Image (cartoon, rainbow over all chains, first blue to last red; front, side, top):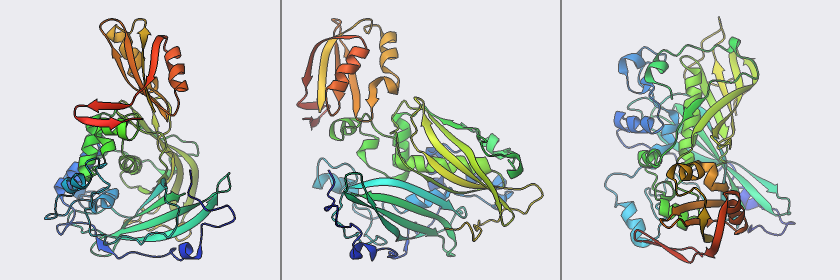
Length: 191
Length: 169
Length: 89
């Protein structure tokens, strides 16, 4: 059942529209040591990609990329890792809730780089799809920065007259030279 | 599954040699196992129990089994496009949605078919329909992609890639 | 909702036949919401199947399609799995 307001009321209120273009703080997603071989090895093996461009220095140097490369989508996962020195979030999550789903109470970051919430009563969230745009491959040693913004918010009217919002968040990943590595656009349905 | 040697020796596909309707060679992955799913969750530190705790997935979440991660799927599609473009093409962008769940036992066929072919600023673009089809014909990840392949005798594809102004978002 | 069916299925005491009937995803995933999550072949020839879905109708249809002679279908209340306790109503 949707939490949608009555069909005469638009869900795209002025307060919701005002979120379009709102950007979060730019934050460093990587740890101080940036992209490193071991994390790259674990990631590329988990996607079962044996490409020597990820591990064979001599071969990679002879390609147009000039050295070892990293799947750009790797950037989008770096920021989710647990920072060294933090209290163990998994133990904390299950202490707070023995029936934790493993992520609900797991807070690995300080909230920096997060966007403000869209002010809507439509609380049910569904993944409406993603887009990844690639510009260059991160290199070993690159530090990764990310900045998210609300790229667009649209309203759709369902067959039963209830309203839903489609919220598109765009996150730009850059390196220490401010070069764009990739752009991730994630769309969510709020209903 | 491709091997490291195949990727080392991959011959360039040229824009000139591809037509609308062309179906690129698929990438077959699987059968998936709980260990594959666990490995991915560990690699990206995703502790969601639906991906490795079968009892939780089935009895708490009402799922058919532990599930293949959407984040894994969204890493496989760019990997497939990268392979298609090697050595000198560029897998510019891909968009997709999540449909059929992937569970252990499933075999995935990653596929791509050309829907449009065009030139812009001297670069050869191909729009593709892409997806990840399961062994019982369910589509798990329908999407669209745009790749750039070199044109014979044409200019090299710039790296870092800068999309032509007319095509940029 | 979750149900248990008890009955008989000819030939399913043979592991090869049992595997053929239950191995492939499409054999036990009826549709996106309905799944036969477990089947047990007992030594006395009876079978137990566990199913979840919004209604029992899809389960009954699956059992019929699979050639079961059904003795009973009963809703489940709660389940213990190796120390994990689940309320399933």
